[in-house]
Image 1 (cartoon, rainbow, N blue to C red):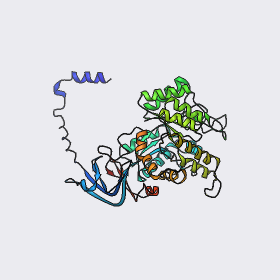
Image 2: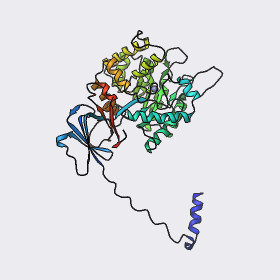
Image 3: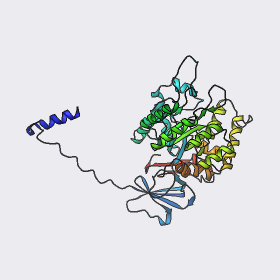
Image 4: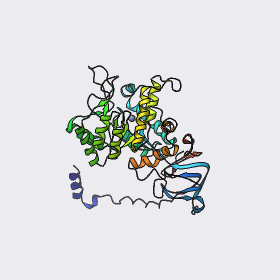
Length: 430
Ligand SMILES: [Zn+2]
């Protein structure tokens, strides 16, 4: 059709063309350089705290970082005095579901089956805003949980500046083996599932490619799950299926992340070559050592288990710890002993978006991590593990995603709750 039109146009006599072509648009004005000098009490650069340092931002990038005395404001720079505050890289949430809201507000089944996609997207816009306001300038969003490719649209709306939110890496629908996921009603009714079912070499390859084609930044796969209500998790995909998913995604430049909590599910996902394993509640020293050996990181998501145990009636601080929490404690101990790399993320969505810091607080207060370990985790470590070399540290040339908090979060993790300023790409968003 296009060819026909072009041919027809060429056949027209010159005189029939418009007498005057519209004037060309004026050349764009040279983009003005915006310089911003931030002078906090201290700078945490993703690794170490530096009292008395300052950061110079040029447009959307960091131009210089160093002792305030050596960092003079260039002509035209605006200076922001931030007394008493610590400036750090924008935090990176390792495990979110922007399209879910807390399960004590509505059970997961009801969110997937009863809430319209429009309602879920509307909620997601509020969730994105709350995430950014909490100082999380990037989030790795691990599945739309029945909302199809809505996460791709939410990400697009943020990138277009239509709604405030963090930079989002999206998984889209996630992959599950047929019959292994939910919601499950009676055997006679087929209901929409919280992820895409795919099986066999052809099936998993096609589904992986489909998700990538529709915008997945990475592939999320459920390597194990509970096949029936009230039974323990068991492996879902075969080794061959997992291998093919990883090969297909990697050849398209996408990593794969696996939900897994059984030693066998974790082992298969590790051998297949996933980037991270999520949860890992039943992880043994042996499987964590295998992960370390293969360069697979663990994202333990302690806040999700803590929240769901309380939704199920555990009165924290009064009742004895449920088995699941005790198991989690043992697995984290084994993980630390093995030296496996740790990515940090809370599975936020199970609990309220904007309360992302809950994971950091629990890791320090209940799992023996130091505030410094957790801070490195949510900044430079997450960036390295998720292969985001343009963020997570404060260095010249990296994105000017910055957060200023009251006090010293390397001493007191609760300081992360006192977010006073958020810069995303050099723009003040809080
Ligand atoms: Zn999750």
